[in-house]
Length: 164
Image (cartoon, rainbow, N blue to C red):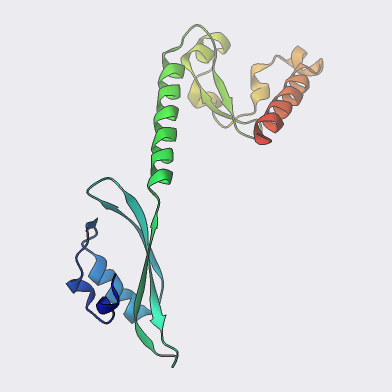
């Protein structure tokens, strides 16, 4: 923006954003006196958080709306890369029948269970998701402390990954 743009209507300023609701959002913020945030894109693939706030003058009057745009393109790209990586991992896990892939949350609850795990342990994913990892051990293994040893190793792995 240029100094000569101060005081001009928002509708007079051209932009490349895919944001047809911009004028409506600015008016809504002005009327409601509440902040609004929205993710918006441009045709070239860049992404922004549009943050709109009521503008309070030095005389303590609401005189307009302040618009701030924060470039979040790299964050969006990282999120998409993560999503694609997770999808690839899911496809590999689903297509693997020769060995079990069991994914646990930080509390030792099963969150994912592939076909190989179904064949090896005899439980379907529907039966085990949400259950404790100890389900895969026999009563004898649990009595001998095998499941506790595994839990200790899982905790050590979690700590190692958390500290990186």
